[in-house]
Amino acid sequence: MGEVFVTVGTTLFDALIRALDSVKVVTALARKGHTSLVFQIGKGAYKPYVDNGIMPTKYFDFAPSLGECMSKASLVISHAGSGSIFEALRAKKQLVVVVNDLLMDNHQSELASELSSRKHCVATTPEKILQAIENLDSESLVEYVPGDPVNVARGIDDVLGVPPALSDE
Image (tube, rainbow, N blue to C red; front, side):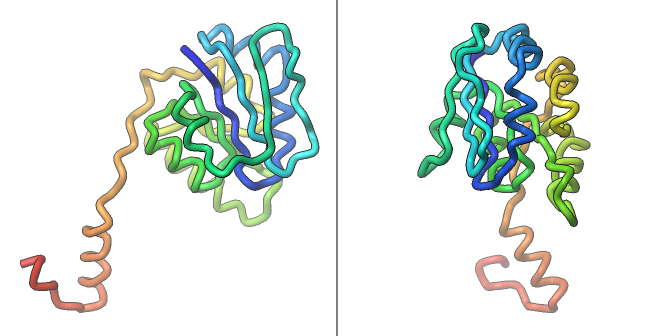
């Protein structure tokens, strides 16, 4: 299958890195056919164990862009930040979104749940990541198709009573 890319974006989410840095989880990824593991750990203090004996593993804190890491990956495991989620979906990657349930007013949970209910990704928590990986069925995921911003703008114009532009007619 290929590489697994794990990202926490610019956040601190050691619980995600720690949950994935276990023999059981790495073994489950290998059983699914994945061959290497790359962690982007952000501001985290926890450093994953790179000599796990199961698959090549490496980590880094930040990069100017995560696009190259995403493009190499067959599976992206991401925190629930909208930027990371939509970058992975636009890249047409299998996606597991891990919600940080310790955050207050957790709008990220709402986004992850909505996208999961539409079958664009699998949403989970650090405590349930092993189960999510074991049950991951790429055939059941539905490709994300971004909305058309022109239609959104027209809808807003309609609500505000703005007449259509000449080019719309």
